[in-house]
Structures are given as structure tokens and as C-alpha cells.
Image 1 (cartoon, rainbow, N blue to C red):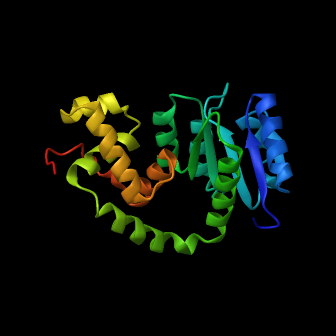
Image 2: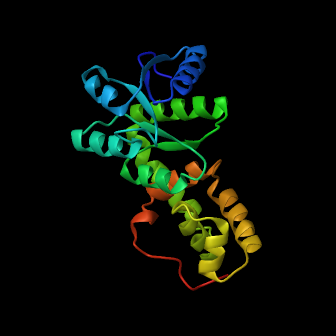
Length: 214
């Protein structure tokens, strides 16, 4: 973690803000908290290196709205989005806008700390993006056609049953393909899988699942 990194926590839930501030404080990370996205934007001039952690669903300006605004303003500080159960489609949308990661509540403390370290490191090492893309493309090439179909569904936030219906296969078969592609892609979580999908821009192809299988 860079010594000058600050984590900016945005959440309308005071208990959630305090909990994150305490967790990051134990890791000796400087933290600033905000009760709303608007309050954060009012202090944007003070934001330097580090990363932003924001909830998706907030009164007034949502996490999605905030990401749009940051993109509009040209702010490049990495953003980690925190979502509730069932908000995966929103999280995927957030990552397409520019979020670097998303975590579902309740998240493991160590997973959050690692996400923060990764986000801060990514800001410091933007030149590694091309090498990472090449590595991800290599993993993607190992997937069968059906595994790629399931991947397309997962990164769009579809449930296993919906993917199974769309592809004309059983939910159990989808689970098997899902386990296989997670292993082949070396993805530690769904958010990791979505991030890799965005790196190689498979979400932007406009192509749905194909009819081939293997």
C-alpha cells in the first residue's frame, strides 16, 4: 500500500462507514468518510492518490450516478463498489462505467483489504494493463464455446437458471461449466471474473450466447 494512499469511504449507513473506517485503520490506512456522494464531490479537490469505496444504493446520488460524474470530471482514482445481495447486474454496470472491483455484502475483511491494496496498486501501475490483457486473453482462449456462453451470462448478472433457459441446458450443467471456467480463468470471485471480462471487452461485443457447444 503506498504510504500516501487515502481510502475515501462513501455510504449513507453510518455503522457501515464506521466499520470500514475501523477495518482500514487497523491496516494503518488513512481513511476519510462521507455520508453521501454529494458530500464527497464537494470535497473532490482534496482527493489525491488512493481509492474510493462506495455503496451502490444511496439516497439522492447513487453509486452509479457517482461513477458517471467521476468519469465526466476525468477523475481516475480507482473505485470499489459495494453491493447488497441481488445487485450483481448493477455491479456489472458499475464496472462497465469504470469501477475497478465490486464486493457483495457481507464481505470478508481480508477480501476488502486485498481489494483496496489491488486498487491502489493498479493506480500506481497503469502500464501493466497491456500485459494483463494478454494474460487474460490467453486464459479466455482455453474456454470451450459453451463455457464462453456461460461466461457471457455470468458477467451480465444472469442467474444460473436464466443462463440454463437461454442455452437450453440444465442448471446443473451450467454449474459445472461455471466451475470449469472459474478455474480456467483463475478467477477468485465473480467480481474478478467480471473485471477480466471487461479487460478483454467481451461485454462490449454486443453478441449474445452462440449456438455452438463442446
